[in-house]
Image (tube, rainbow, N blue to C red; front, side, top):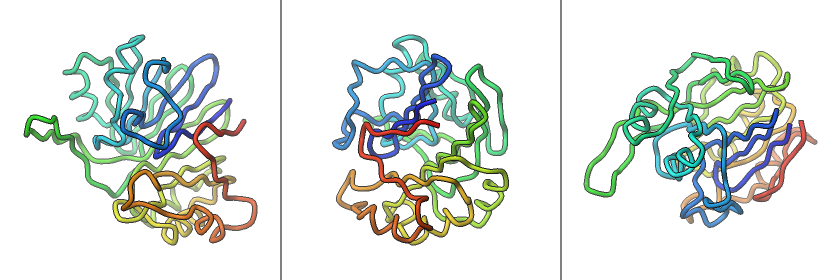
Length: 225
């Protein structure tokens, strides 16, 4: 299984001949190496309904009828846009042909402006815990620090993607404490430097972690699990 980071909160997982994209914010993402016209995911997972996470989901999903996995309200909205979707909720898990998806809590808002003055409520925000090929992958989405992260990490996590941008999410200090609660083998910072208000030095975050845990991935860089 190969996992790659593509700027902001975009993560790609390639496993069992399938490709999974998490939070595919490509258009307007100055840090990503991806091109919408070249991506053909089999599955898309969206943590919440903000534009910098929902991103290009509709266009990408329609290419090859990819299944979009998200909170149920967001899934219903995407279905109304002609997208094949699977709705879930916090604490629920489901087995797909690539592995198991479980939605975890995230402390964050959610909603989508349609560009015409309208606003869609799209359920609560979530994190995602995936079990694939015997490995556990945690993508926190956008969130503040919360103590129940310790429960998310009660079973070993192989890699955790944590936001560090501050302002909208945890900053480096809180994210480092989250890493201690999660006890993941590897921790990758996400959701930083895309916009001026979330500019951070990822090395500051890495230095707050135990030696060898933190991994800064440049867009397009990845790891084999």
